[in-house]
Amino acid sequence: GPTENGKTWLMIDMMMRIALGWTLDGRQENRPRDVVLFAGEGFEDIVHSRCNAWCDYHEVPQDPPHLHLMESFPNVTSEDDVDEAIAEIRKRAPDLAMIAVDTYARAMAEGGLSENDPLDVMKFVRQMEILKRGFQCTVLAIHHSGKDIERQARGSNSLMAAADFGFEITADWSVNALRLSCAKMKAAKRFEP
Image 1 (tube, rainbow, N blue to C red):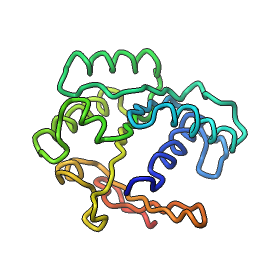
Image 2: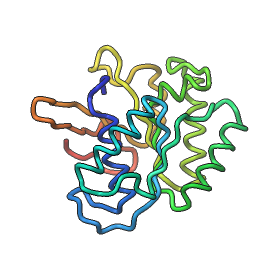
Image 3: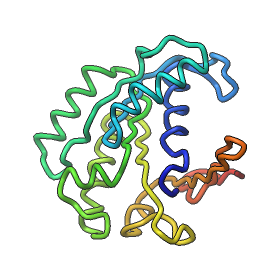
């Protein structure tokens, strides 16, 4: 979705619920699991404002033990950087359910890659697939839509073509509501918004 449209808020909500073992309606019915967030865009804001605000609103202690925040995404063109990130994740998050990248554009820039070049996009996709398979977890990358929202995500369509799922988020800030719709679902039925 577009900038300032609730993507990071929704991702934080999703990750906190996994880290606490909560269902969508706030009941603790699941086992808390580790989640890792590479917060390349606005690390201080995410750590000190958004995550803490979520905890305050839901009346839970700040800094849940299963939430692991990492400031920058590794350079996906450097095997050493990726191996170092994998080792850090293994050390911090032994029961990993999800890795989130905020944002895809920042992760691409870290490696000097272009989100418009299909070959560069596939370098990113390969590394995400290594993480997904190696940790047997979900990998979620936040991505912005282009100037023309109707044309979906900006850059090469190779990212969406390779993705297992894709969601679109729209916000109505007049009533503080987010709308999540399913743009792609590879191995399951699409859900209604």
